[in-house]
Image (cartoon, rainbow, N blue to C red):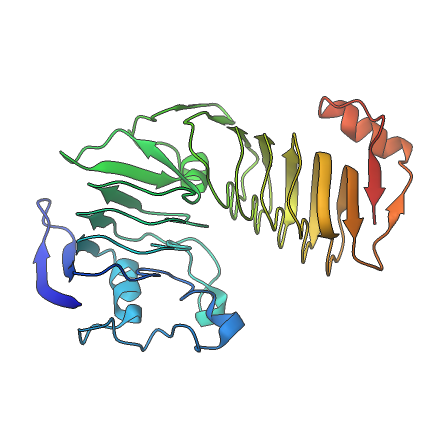
Length: 310
């Protein structure tokens, strides 16, 4: 299914290309988590596994990107392309921080969840992209015939670096996303005092692993909203699906609607304010305190009808 065409320098002469030909889409290419390896312990995917039909392993692709090399995929890709790209994950002995990485070029189409929790690098795509996509927005591409996508977290943290946004506005500390796409993991790993505002509905894991800043969704959100939240504020101006605030460590989650079933499962600390929700014990519904009411007012909400879950 895969053939290596070798390595060659790009036009700037600074990065090597790793070229791969795809005859059938394969999931989790350039997935820095290897499909959440810590959950399945290598049963679903392991860095040592060879990409079908080739001696190259999934881990070697990730290491090439970590070494600022570029990857070109000649064909269509499967789901979860470049998951958590740009994160030096502690699970694999890394620092847990963002790192510079190379870029990915796709000559064909990309399936769903491209760039979930992605923090650095760019993905260039010639074909179509299925939604939901990940923590990404489009910028005007400098490469002819490719669309270019960058991480939302990257842009608000490190700036546009000369890029021009498509369907979004970024000024000062406010990033407004109104590009009409459905996204996963909006604001993933945000650690800057900025406001991300997404117009419209989103899907999975909004604000996962955030530490600072605010992510506001003016629409409904999917499952696992605020998963592993470790600071900052998530505001959903609508409903969320199940498992909101799962494994929440600290921070604030406001849901101007129903926060779904299994709310606050394994929650450690933090504030959850919502109009409705079905929490997992020992978390229970409590009346608002005066500071909770003020928090809602400060965020533009009428406290009437809200409940606290702690």
